[in-house]
Image (cartoon, rainbow, N blue to C red; front, side, top):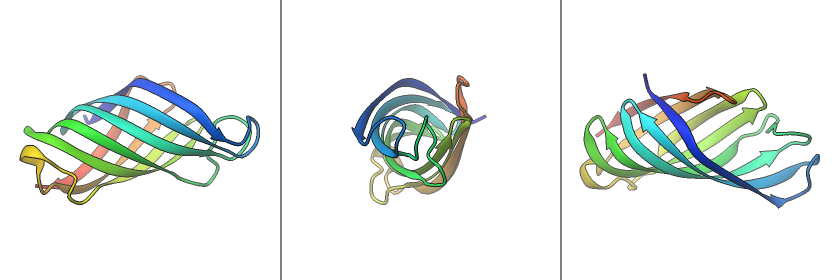
Length: 131
């Protein structure tokens, strides 16, 4: 099974006020297992529609840099996320940023998705790629 766990999440309000439409910046680190093995650092720009932690019907962008291996080949690469979220969970579609892969992963392309329930220790992902 392809999964990841959150190691760290730091979030700061960028503009707006609690209880109103607002924008926040989040910096996170994750540990991956499955087809991707290793760790990542991710930065999100999050939009909250109002009260609580609900993104409404919008998506928020993020960039995530992986350091590890894909199917046993080592290197780094960056993906761009479009994340939708509500108090129950998250859904994300992502794509490898062209030209971002290094080492044995040079030339990597691919897309994937993340699906998870808030509060669970691990979330699942898919990753369809070409090397």
